[in-house]
Every structure is written in structure tokens, then in C-alpha cells.
Image 1 (cartoon, rainbow, N blue to C red):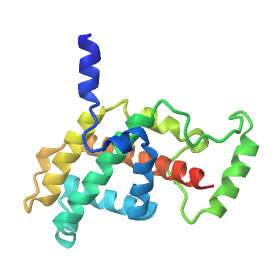
Image 2: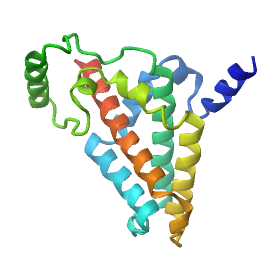
Image 3: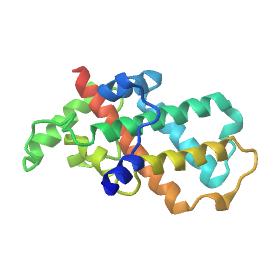
Image 4: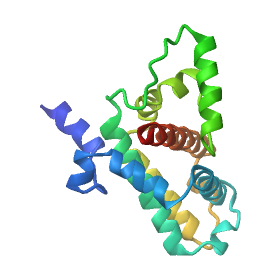
Length: 192
């Protein structure tokens, strides 16, 4: 019983309302209604640079935009946690048939204005793999805490290099890029 309670606490949903918990795909729609995949990736890169390297992007961005981006990202992570066991966004192509898979992906790339660049072939065919894998290094609560530190550091006028390990920043950034791209694919495939 203790292990079950501990797991529930580690992955507690905080930012989603009851409707969004029941239908996490609504969160994906809201995330990409806010801005496009490239804009989200640019914002994430700027945020990473502010935290890891002390760049001055935040002086150009308002604090309310930083808070908004933080909340959108945490909400997407919570939705990913709720969706991680589902085979959502999967293409019905045998992974052994690489030629057909690559042909389909080329055709899909032509259809969409933007397309993921960091997902491998398996993740592109089955973006739900990403939803499962992003929770291997960190759980929902850990992501929330890390991003909360990122938010505070990005809002701070003083750069504290020692406040984050480079490994943690790079790991979280790479996981979030994959999450954004996988969720974008899921969102696009649901619209079809």
C-alpha cells in the first residue's frame, strides 16, 4: 500500500482540471492552439539557454509569458503522464517494413507545415513511445520541480550557474523537445 501511495504522490496531477484529466487530448489541442511547434521549440530553447548559460532572452520576454509557458509545459507533461499507457497517434505500419514507413513519413511531411526533427523512425511511427520514455529519468513531480526552478532562474536578474547541473538541463531539454514533437504528431494525426 505504501508503494502505491508513494507512486501516486510522485505523479500527482496538479494543473489539469477534471475535464482535462478525463480527456488529456484537450490539453494537447490547447498547447498547440497557443502557438506552433517551431515557436514552442524556440521558446523552450531560449528558456534552456537562460537557465544553463545565463543568456538575456528573459529581459526581452515578459514575466507573464514565462509563467504562461511554464504552465503550458507542465500541463503537457501531466497530460503525457495520463496518456502514456495508450497507443495514441500510432500508425498501422509494420515496423519491419522500413520502406513503407519511410514513404509514409515523407508523404506526411509534405502534408504538414512542420514536422519533428529529433524523433527516430520508431518514435515517429508510434509517438506514444516517447510518452512512456520521458518518465524514465524523472517523474511528473520531479519535472514540475525542475521546471519551477527554471522559471525562477529565468525570472531572476542574476545568473546562478551552480543552481542547475548541465546534465539535468540537457536531459530535461532533450526530453521536452521529444515530448513536444510527439504530442504535435499525435495532435496532427487526430485532426486527419
